[in-house]
Image 1 (cartoon, helix red, strand yellow):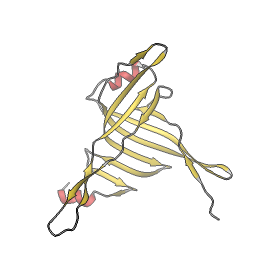
Image 2 (cartoon, rainbow, N blue to C red):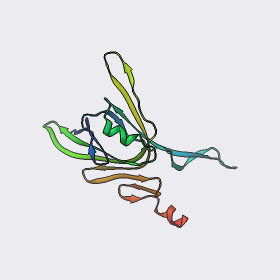
Image 3 (cartoon, rainbow, N blue to C red):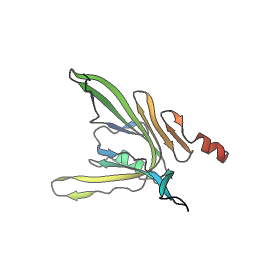
Image 4 (cartoon, rainbow, N blue to C red):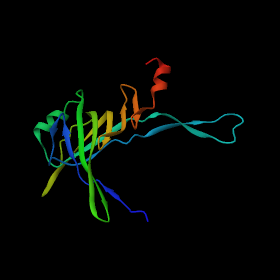
Length: 173
């Protein structure tokens, strides 16, 4: 009989330019790599299909739990790219309880799209959110690179394999 194991990822810490934001952010939404598909149709084909044509623009969001001047100064400049890192601990459980823990790290480079000035309500903590235009993302689980994408360097790697190598060679890059 196969034993079921379950992975849980329930918390994280954010770093901007190497500085910990522990306790300063309520949440972070990391970018989704959305594949753009283009429709292909031709005479003689009995149907249409969609083929991969690139990756859509990437965006991340951080929801702040208050104002922190040192952090807001960093996100206020839309011309300065920020190096962000989201670190977490992936826990594995089976019938014996927690049996393993592994680091999960996501590296993100992006520029702020807005400067939050807040949403004030009586007796409620201020609500503020910053969106980032993302140019680079890399996901590493337990030291193994799962995905790396850099729009400005034309890099797209999955499981360490450069899936754009031949394309880049064809372009002379």
